[in-house]
Image 1 (cartoon, helix red, strand yellow):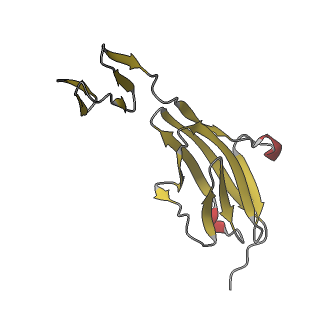
Image 2 (cartoon, one colour):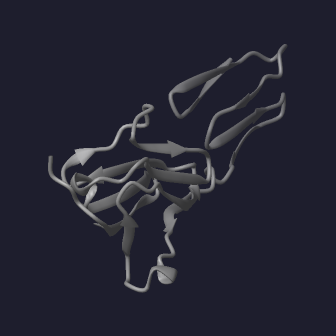
Image 3 (cartoon, rainbow, N blue to C red):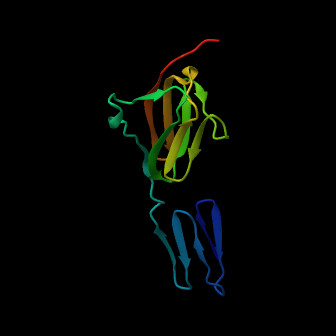
Length: 151
C-alpha cells in the first residue's frame, strides 16, 4: 500500500483496488503497475472586458438625457469566469433592486437604467467588472438637460 498526495487530497492505493482520482488541476491514475501523475491545464481564464460604445452620443463617454425621459444603457461584458459587475455614482454603489435608478445584470449584459431622469441624476458614473483574471472599468458622465421648474 502507498499514498499519493494531490492538491489537498490523499489517495491511498491498495493492490486489490484500482482507483482513479481527479482533482481540479491534476489527475492521478493508479494501476497495479505504476502511479501516473499527469497535469491537466487549469480552467481557462479571460480577463474581464467592458464593451462600452458611446460614440453615437457625440462626446466621449458623455450621455445627455432630457429631463423626465428614460435612460437605458446596455453594456456588453465578457470574461471567463463570468465577471462580477458593479455600477457606481461617485462613491455610491447603485443597487440591482427595483427602483427609479437601478442596474440590471445578466450573464453577458449589464444595463444601467434611470426612469424619469432628474437633475440630481447628473454626474460621474463608473462600471467596474472583476474576475480572477483581472479588472476593467469605464467612466461616463450623465448630463440632464431640459426645462427646470421650481415650485
